[in-house]
Length: 438
Image (cartoon, rainbow, N blue to C red; front, side):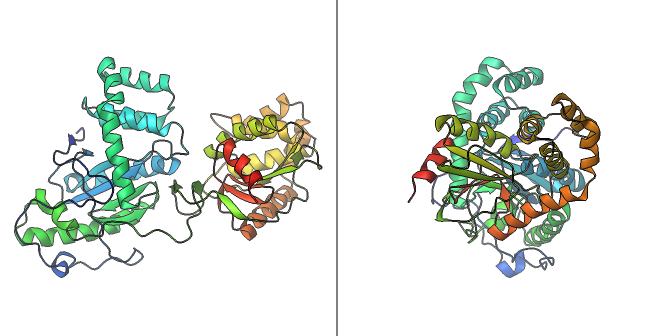
């Protein structure tokens, strides 16, 4: 059965700190009676947040006992992974769970906002779920979005008008809600008000949903109607998520499955020393600007940052030295084989050529594909293959990873511009500010 798509009616979202009173006048059960089920081990301390859902697109039955509010970005790889988890949860729990979506395009994702507008415009024609599936499958350029709208059967004139009109207004309200709640990264979830950050394992969601279902059934036992369960579950909840103390700003970091879009400073206040021994570099050693980059060949933000680095070099001809350090993240299964390919090419004097080709690779990346690149660059492919099996390549990459760990670098791309840390795929203007900083 095709999922039910509804646009939740009600009050428009009020931006920046205004609260929303429930319209149900009956008294709420005490917190103890609502949270009668014990929170499973391994989940955060039980804290409920007040997340209004009026006017947001939703998938599922409005009478569902559990509402998952998902803050998402179509260009975020973790959101794509989490979307598969949400699909499994809908299949497992059926009508007991509905998904409410809050579009939160992060500023470092250049195609996230057009994608969000496309999804919201499609929702006005009853095709929200279909458009979301196409957006997560990609690509997200204008022609691909137009083709998706055509394939889905949308009225193209209305679709274009809505993107500039009602969809833009809806996106403004969604972003205001994220700001009010303090949601800075994607994906972020609230399950009947309980907070989960990142593309967590499905077992984490099962545990939280089961706990929230037990609390919802306790509400039903007191006479609360199913359609009122969500509003009663979040009554009295906190208005804003506690900020993490160690948030270092926008990046696609290791370990938490979250793209961070925070507003923390992205230029370090101190000058740090980064080991560069044996690391490949381009530009003269006498250059007044040295940029050391920790990157992962499978990271989409690293690929995007390449254009910025090249533009910065062109703006400062002959005055920039680029040093590359490997940081293959553990959740990118191809990152280490690609890093080894670059190191193997370096042994034959073609590191930067291989580096550029690796970031441009699309489709299947296997040994045959890497051999094909090596061959096209004029490398001795036999030697290249032998070098790929050499343990010393892993040791060299591991040394870069150790340097990253010692510096507290846990996400890519991370740059050190004349020793000042710059986190994420930042514009060239950020590099200019870094070299000007005293």
